[in-house]
Amino acid sequence: MKVYEIRVQRALSPSGLPEYDYALNPYVGCLHGCHYCYAIDYTKGPPGKMWGSVVYVKANLLEVLRREVRRLKPGVVGLSTITDPYQPPEAFYKLSRGAIEVLAEAGFHVSVQTKSGMVVRDLDVLKRYREMVDVGITITTLRDKARILEPMAAHPLARARAVEKLAAEGVRVWIFMGPIIPGFNDSPQDIEEVVRVAHSTGAELIYDKYRPRPMADARLAANYRKVEVSEDWWARVKKAVEDICAKVGARCVDAEEEWAAARRHRR
Image (cartoon, rainbow, N blue to C red; front, side, top):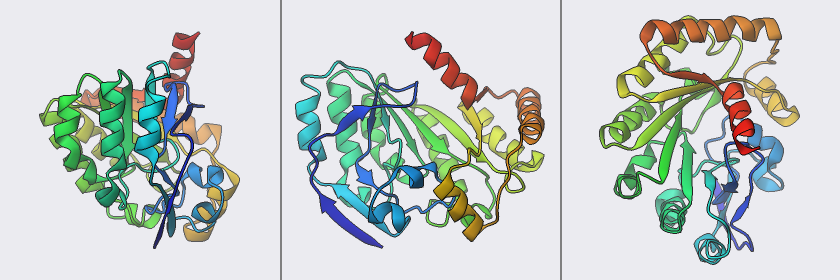
């Protein structure tokens, strides 16, 4: 594991995701090293080539961000879109914590997404700005096999406990069950266990299929197996998810449908 500090000229960038106005990525690369991550295909240099082993820390991020929020129109910020904001270096640098404070104070809404239980460290900040923050925690499966594809991320049970703690303190929290990968976490048992966590905590569950990309595909094939995603397979899995959500009584949304709704809203 190698961590390097870099300096940047920009903190916020326009988001390519319809639900966000801006993206904020405090780090380049991710030490969680998830083998299916689409961010591999969007990360240049050593952090991309040595995925899970090298990360760049944007050491002057908060300084730059404080300048930007004074001139940019407030909007929704995705923290983060191609890295995990609560990966190991965050324990020391506290860039995500600082960014939430800066953005919320300036009237920006912050949408956090992570695979780390470390987010509960910032419960005081999340509670203070609960009207300006939501937190998404990715749980692909609650079983130990998560380690196969998410080798350095927090155990999914630790993530489930983070969801429970955040929800208990009144922080708006949601679960991202994705990607759903053929033959890995697409069984009714895997799905229902995650859905029940969402229901018991009152969290919304957003689910999505694996979306093939060249470098992520190659890494997945090398560390797990080659994955084929078909329309027929997804139609069956989507129906299973919706049936389980209805049975359990959880609020579940297909990510693709949410993106479409976000696009319509922004027109």
